[in-house]
Length: 408
Image 1 (cartoon, rainbow, N blue to C red):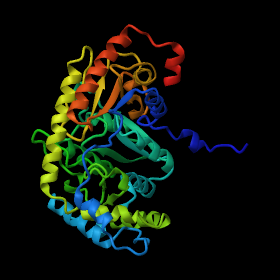
Image 2: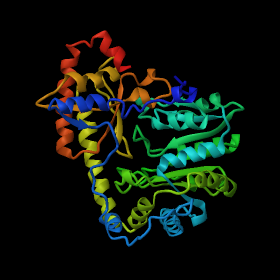
Image 3: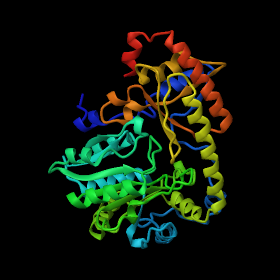
Image 4: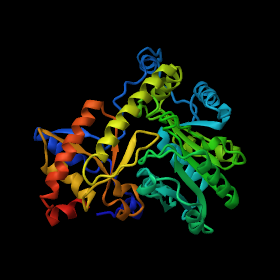
């Protein structure tokens, strides 16, 4: 039999999706699974975007320009300008989701074996993009006791080598929901300039900031005009995950020209996704006011409820719609699998994402889980009751060794 590539073996599985077979089996047994494992909002997509798909008059679904529709890129540039990020359409490229923007950026900026420093825990798929691009992810640890604040700059300095070419942040963060403040962003700017690095900023959750907190875009940092790559997406902003439309944004003309070559190789981003995304730019501000209010309420219900459970610790995030909680268990992977295989409470169980997959090495996240507060309040309250009952039962029902090994 032909061999699988080394890169194929090194490609990590998703900690968000790897327990899906157990969830499907639970549902087949009649158990209702409350999905807190994945950032799939239940917020309705704006009507203006759905109407654009329903009422388009296309006779042929053609390729678009490899950089995306010119009208959409102009619309995006105007959108960013309204948010204090002054850009031209030529500084924006439409991609197949934010994922493709990250992958294109890594391939254009880094050579095989180059190093990219990433505060951890981090979005699990960064590992996969790095493997695909031949980049080495170098984690710098943030901790739950600080609410996952930016690690001390000395920790970054200790990790910088001749192969270090960039830093990647997610702001607000997935999986932690942490929002970097102006001082933290200024610290990163100084570090990037000192070592002549790229700064990749995944800003797909910029709208979702709470308690009066301000989002500071990396694109607004003075002196980094040639250093910053911003990654964006419509997936969460407009609850359009399936549109698969993102954006690669930079003022570095040479980098944009290089990324265009990768974009040409894949021909074009999705036509219908671009139609919906361009229309979504007309979404009224009232939509976001309602959505942000809804997520803030859900955050308070879930995070306050988690911290009320014995032995659970969960910092309250100021952005995105995720939180990371530390549980009174020895192995969160095993516990999350047990929840789906062997537990139900009043006909329900909870699906969460083990946080081990959000670290470069699984150890630091061994007792942690990521939860997404993307369900309505009543379901979150139910999930908390189910989780409380599960933790109590689990403490008195040790997991067999074979089950722990399977979960790992």
